[in-house]
Length: 260
Image (cartoon, rainbow, N blue to C red; front, side, top):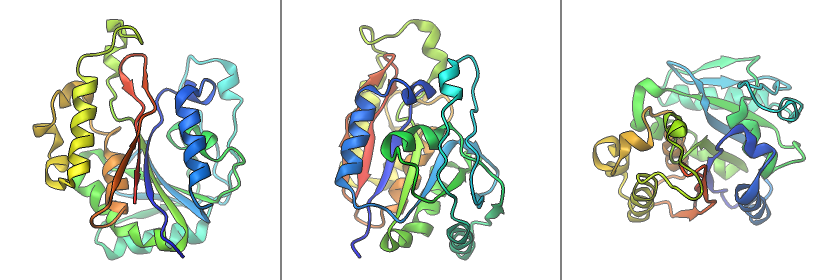
């Protein structure tokens, strides 16, 4: 079996599920280009824990972890089956890598999981395992998390990191828009693309010191950390393909990366 790529998906606002725009089109194109996965392991920026936690629910609950949005968004369900046996294997692999994981047999799926998967695989028929990230442990830890699971790609498992390539919601009050883009967005996403293209892992792991406007693009780390999970999951010498899905509200870059 040919190994699947790993993916990093910028999921944007929960409203992406109702107004998918260019992101929805790009994810549909990507799904059509990929072999159909046997299962999915997805690390979400919205499940934060001090150590890796692995969701092993038989039928993960769709969590609507937001407020103030239209009722239609709360009505969306993503009834994909869980994969308890795969979750147990993920725990074993992470434990063997010294990453001290735990299994959560009841954890559901937050919008960082179901919003992109709703657009990527709308039939919700692929078994999935959610995975937490550890914002206190930084990019190198997330990269190691991905490396520990990279072998699953050989078994038809799609490994996904879900976040946002830029994520500064504090700037919503500034009034950026499609007509007035935040000045830090393009320099930051260009730097990420260049460093990924060069395979410069050291610079990427040190992005907070080396990337332009890093603290403006990400006042906190959690939405970029899934990128390092996907990068690690791709294995050594991976080729990074940027898929431009536009910029939402002038400040949320919706880049998708495919790592082969």
